Length: 112
Image (tube, rainbow, N blue to C red; front, side):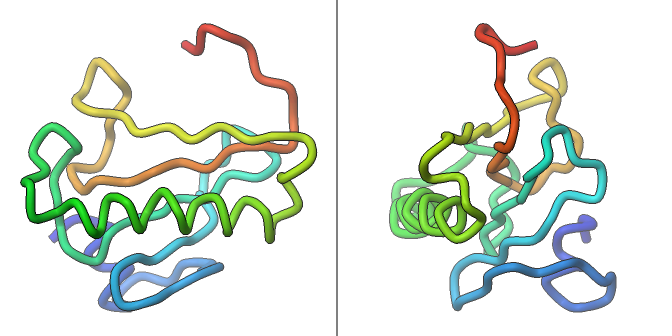
């Protein structure tokens, strides 16, 4: 079980900001921006490169919910960044697909 599986199972506490049948969203414990929320699928997909064609519903749902969550967090006007890391060189630290919503400050491009 990953740490995210344990959060879904309520074995580890998290500051949950959104939940439905497909996804769970909570505040990152080590935020890289004033607003930093993770959106995870309840189904464990290790990383985006391992997603299967039948995962399309949850993947699209994650993106739609990320936009809604960012709006509720007050990021609609100033902007926000969505990030999905895939593999260790990209910064992936938990092998459970997760989408970062980050905002509340100016961000440089390119990242990293």
